[in-house]
Image 1 (spheres, helix red, strand yellow):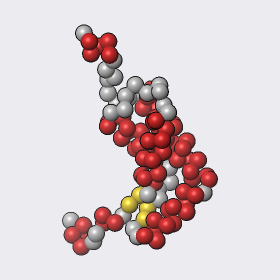
Image 2 (tube, rainbow, N blue to C red):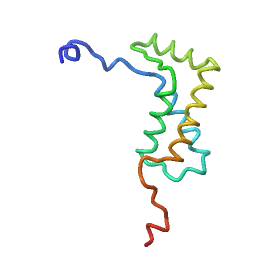
Image 3 (spheres, one colour):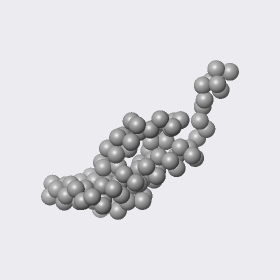
Length: 107
């Protein structure tokens, strides 16, 4: 595709991804009721959270500073926390695969 050949689109980043990943890691440390923490489940959690948030795209260092300032706003930080918490619960209640239990593995 000519657009991809002519322009470096690798610089286009959604900074909200970093915030969600950091928050997901923080919340998962304290979440004891979760049966599965496989890559599929963790990626589902991140995707669900990101789909409910306003994106914070950047293409430069100045953009990084803008998104960092946005994260300092209590409302956006609270939105990230809530989105991650909701995503964890959704995946916990309805994982994208069968959950193997210790009993089933020992049979």
